[in-house]
Image (cartoon, rainbow, N blue to C red; front, side):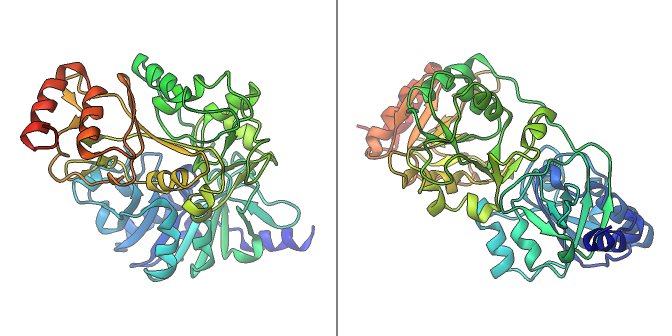
Length: 434
């Protein structure tokens, strides 16, 4: 047994014992998505409820499983703060039982380092320790830099967590305590691709040249784009999310990362969730690197990739080109995430393009997502000064460089036909177009 194995044994404890180190008022931050330390959280939740601990703050980007700390009545014990909203915390946020902290994804670690007080606890799930004493953050390195300022660091070692490379390692000497959890990490099924998604994907794929570097995200449209790229050559990846479709394109010889101008030969990402086969692809694979989000999503870093292609979606857009991607009226539905990070990074890239792609309607074609003005209370995620390509199933248009009148006409052109007349009337009433 080497010195690191001995240190591991000394720091190993149970979730119940570890939970005793938490106290009322503690501020805790976790790496995101499926790297959330679920066994530690379950134990802390039980202790907080039993001993009436109050206002323990749990901060994470995008929780991916149903958990007791989000149930009605638990908010007095554990106060959830989201950096992104999912189906698992949306209702608590809407009801005021949890809260949302607006911030571009790239800037979240900087907010914790420079604006807020240092967290009392940083915790997350990690892969098993190697012979040198290092654990990998696995599926999420996004908030890894926050652990450097936390007062205590706890990890949950899971043998089903892939060991990934990059700036995503933590040493046993940096950890205060650890537990083990053999429950399989969460798998997330791929979203279904609709016929409209396929049309949008094909329109975007036509704009993507060989040797481009991709940012793909969550949803049917990014997956449809990936399917439409099968005839491209030497594509690369620099993306906040590593998604299942990237594995398919790699296996098909489409993604090689061989022509990238930054991190040549490497996939670069900050988090992933998806199929077990994707986790297996990532495990111990030196062709993939996960780095903290303040590096991956830094627009200055993104822009160093020539032909950077950023593909995002939205909830609605108005005739001025203002894009809302995070709220339905005043209600938080998701978050800004890294949309603006990649919009600005791709815009500054040599040969880069950024696409906002969405189906033109909602609620079975009864609501247009292209509106005269944004819904009252809606938040602007991408400003009209930053917006570039807009894509619906009815076409593609580039707003950058167009006047307000030209923009309105182009957006009406790619709107659903049943709404074009009323959009035109609204544009005239607002004196956008003559």
